[in-house]
Length: 388
Image (cartoon, rainbow, N blue to C red; front, side, top):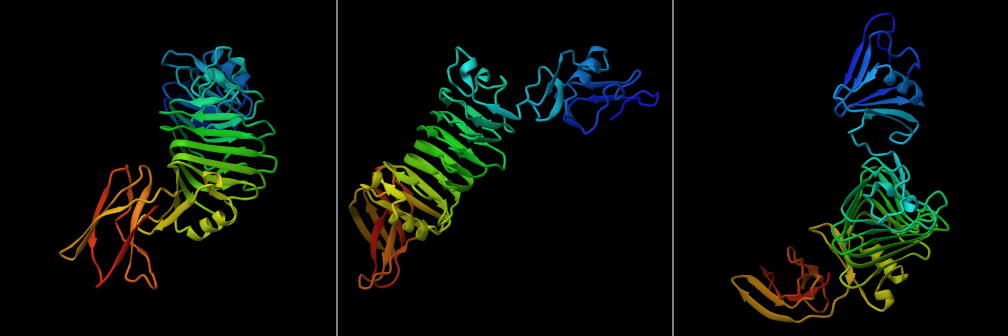
């Protein structure tokens, strides 16, 4: 990149966007009366360590900010292995951030307190967020937090604890693995009212030697790609006490491996895209999916209309309190248990039975009785309510 290289005059005004430069000359990239002006939301990124050269150009007025604020010149924090020039009033997220609040004596342990991170910059939607510092206090997400991806317990260090509280949310954007217990121990907790959305895979207890624990006490968590407990030889525990865990991908033999367990309690719900009834049944039979630590029954079923397999703790049985047939329609009323999913199944005979789901009858119950009216079929039908 060259301004005024052979005696001419060159002016570059970077008012917005990013100018990426592969090559830079310490003395000759800006000559004569030429000027590189970086203002507004403009950013210049140069390969390699060019911090001294850029600072020299700034000092002699060849790199300026016409809006009147200072320029910041960073190496290796905003962009790894690169020099970044940007206005001082423009906040850019770092490429990498490590949770290390020990240097912040007044730390309250919250994600958006920038002094809690190793470079004193809060993570952004491109940041690789790492938890691996020994004895670090828990990190608490109290508002909208974003990251490229999150790795807890990689590079040999302990993964610590990440808590997403009521009103807090964590969203990752990059097509990279997120891990709770990458190669060592880690704990992630989502409280009632919290939420998380992972763009790519979520591994809990990934590599050998790791012991990861993922707890949901409520809220909503969505995983954009594969979900795995103990995927590559570690141990992963998912404790779903409340809320809903939405899984886009599921593997019949690898999603729960080794000593790993997915345990459901209370009204905790897992929704998996596609018909996963066979694999879920196999995981239950092998003790890898449990209810109440093995003391309860896992209820599961596939809804073809929603293309989802639902897992919950089986609720107490409830009574059908009303039946009516009129004008070719059947109306059923039944009691429910709050927080559980119900639907109706029908069969023309009890010997043999051929139970099938009645389309459109799925409901998420509040504890009040539910009434559905649907077309009757055939001369005789038997109905039952099923959860989920």
